[in-house]
Length: 360
Image (cartoon, rainbow, N blue to C red; front, side):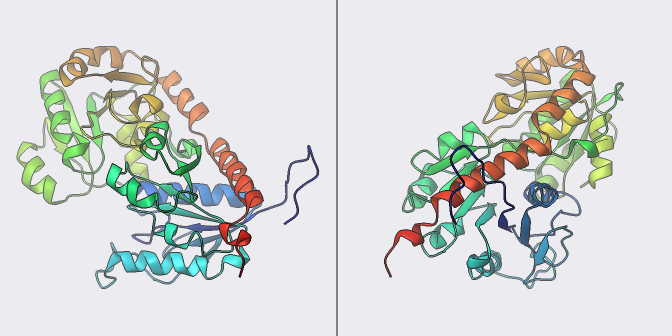
């Protein structure tokens, strides 16, 4: 590919392979932030006129060209095991067709299998990781120090120190699909996976101490049954199950605040942006990327400890919900997100694949 003349941007459409996890469909029927984000970016790239092939299971819905090896995801089909092999086959399908693309972008849920292909592919491969890696994982991945990553927050970029982080791009949400309410109902909401690190027990404590009803929304799992269910009384602590998009919007929009007492640092926190898009402010503990997402005193409040959060809840309720909504639109819109990715893609395409510089 020849470079554009000096001072003239390369505006030609890109041929993009977008490799999704094959756990469930893209977009997902209920929860699944990675599949949701993959869908938003894929459809945004298609709208911008790029030639996109989505590597995902056949139950996916997309305006891109869809390449599928599996009818359903391994979360829906227990015969697809081990799951790692399913992911590897899906990734390999894109690598095998590398000469058909300018760039291959892999969305990675647990670990970047794509690193092993980075010196074998004739096309540049970039990966986006959707977790906070451990130092041991980063040390292992550093065997491929040239392989490019797109970080989802500065918090995550710090954890990826020593690797080739080419840019940090905060997530986006389709804010047009999140209606907002100026006047909420009288409850708090917790929305996220039921794990110890998400702080659901702490959310229950906040609600009890504040004397407010708490709505819990997530898929039932062993942690819920063993640890959370004994606290659910159907009156003050209410479990509403795993919700589809419209129900999620209604639940978030009706809440006085989203309670986010996270106990383990996370690299982003998509539900924070989703709540804000509904005009709902956030009460969160200061861990991970929370301060990158929540503007303290504008779209929510960020606290150092649970006692502070409980005491500060009244100040969260007084925040201007119209402004909360507008800041979400300004900061987490899809157009900004898509353009930032295209800029990274063009830089990587111009630099070329490591394979291109190697002798046969």
